[in-house]
Length: 170
Image (cartoon, rainbow, N blue to C red; front, side, top):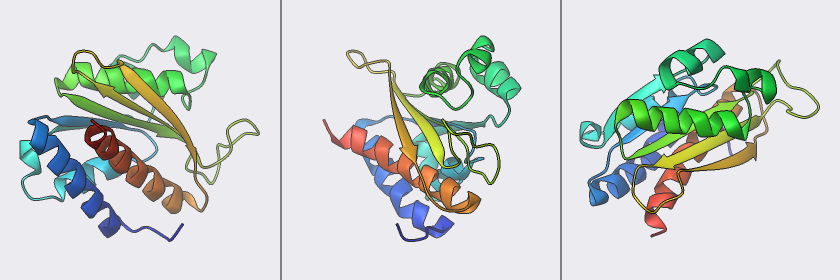
């Protein structure tokens, strides 16, 4: 995959914004390893105030619990980088923001922190919708290559792309 820079995220955010505007929806983001890159990409788009509600940068486990309501026991049971935590982050963001769509990101950007089961580049994503008739939350696992910056950029790009594709799939 070619190296991504921040400017590469804006067109993805524009596509997401168009899909949200078409539905009259607002999005929220709960970010851990990306540290606000998704929110920064979204707010780089003129007019994003019409479809972006708010973002949560919950880097620590305590922040995930305090701001999003993630059950602290999950961290001991499955770890912060897990589908369960991604799910809880997305649902918590949706609940606390009152948005229609929430995307959540939790992963290991490196260079440290990886294990045999969860190597550097492991990122879990959650996507939750408020719309009736939808599954409450979907989760996806991705493994990205590269240094810390590359992992973070790829994760932010994936989150923006996945959210837009999910909206366009209907």
